[in-house]
Length: 411
Ligand code: HEM
View 1 (cartoon, rainbow, N blue to C red):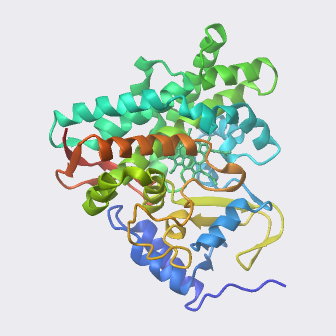
View 2 (view 1 turned 90 degrees about the vertical axis):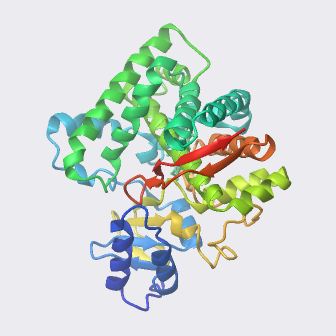
């Protein structure tokens, strides 16, 4: 027997609160809504039948649940696009690891998973540190410069570009195409913006089709070469190799830029925490976890019921969508002590910012390494950073980050 969830105020009120958080300007922090939902409706069903979860344990359970997987929740909004745009986008989407279920998911993840182990990722550390040092020194020469466009974006483009084997001259163009193409898979994108996003997704796929051909002729020590090998050995089809390459670029660059920018803003507005890290830099890994918890780059993580099941006390029918609000789960007072306090030595386990279950972020070690090295340099090199103006959030509450974050760096 399943127990219906404890909604005391009614699903309609909960839905109103949820929609107000999604509809608010991006610089309005959703904390008031998270508090309300935790207290009154940690599990509720919207009028369209979507189940929304905000408790840590419920979101964690949903992400790992074997009866939940990926459905077409990320492409339902594409119905108005003309066939010449929707067909190629759907062909890619169907073969993209992040949207696939086992066994296709397992087949797609296997060829690249080995590249993302801590041992492999650690080989990138030296280059990452050199790049961080160089970018910080450039920032120091430009008081008031934008941390996002002058530090986080070039660092993200380089880290992911190196990993994939994207030639240096192509990276700026990919840094433009990648966020544009990701909008096509975001149900919150305005319909008027969808054609441009679909064009960008197709352009990106064409780019990686060409790069795969190049790497077959001129192999390197990179992920696209590895994927090209999987193609040659018949493990993956061509469209799967192209989709995987574009997916890795998209999943990596934007999230990394947002992780770094969100973390930097958190440090700038909690100077006591950065000062404490400088006094005792021995807790860097805890600081990384805490900053990832504080403001996750991906907030809404959806799953679809693949068969009848019960999650968080709600009986689900096949096709029903469950949304885990990762940002809210990371602030759940039943899981974290004083969750709205940034505490860089907090030791309450990993947050849900890298998701969970079979889709657990492939780049989690890499993301942690890059943020950890930024913190190490800030904590140990005598570099100071201050806010130099009013930051601007990027639109939306699903992919969370900054568009503009002016800083003064002194070294
Ligand atoms: C550093 C480069 C990164 C790469 C290459 C990368 C790559 C990926 C890939 C390929 C997936 C899909 C995995 C699958 O479906 O099996 C994924 C999922 C995900 N990534 Fe990352 N990622 C990176 C950084 C980040 C960062 C910085 C964050 C946020 C802190 C993040 C958060 C997530 C989340 C929330 C998911 C979905 C997990 C789920 O559905 O449960 N990623 N990532």
